[in-house]
Length: 153
Image (cartoon, rainbow, N blue to C red):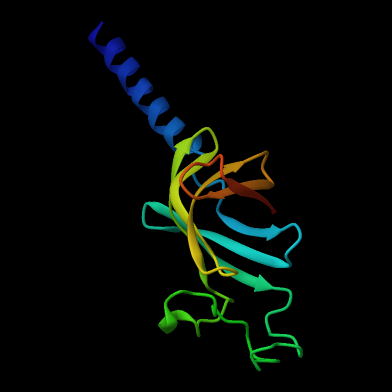
């Protein structure tokens, strides 16, 4: 009887440990994601126990010839940032999302998303729809008052 219960305990331990490794979908958002209409690509990666992301590609990485601030042909920068010392950072490689944790059911919350167009950080939640569609909802205060974007693999 002792041998059977020990064998059952070992088998149960093995099954639980394997299911924790194989059944975790917390890393499902890792990789490269494209915006559907903005000509940009983002890389989501692990930063410690959290998930972060940065701009990895811009269809138009440089300012156009019609740039009103005289930066035609130069790499686009974070010029809308409220901190003047950060306005010279190039958009390519710019950290965009930070602090997300997997909460289960294909959802990541607790993070913030930075919008270089207005220089503000917003609360955000992320969720997967299928394997190749990522939804990001940025908001102030309540998620009811926000905007959702779709990124695709």
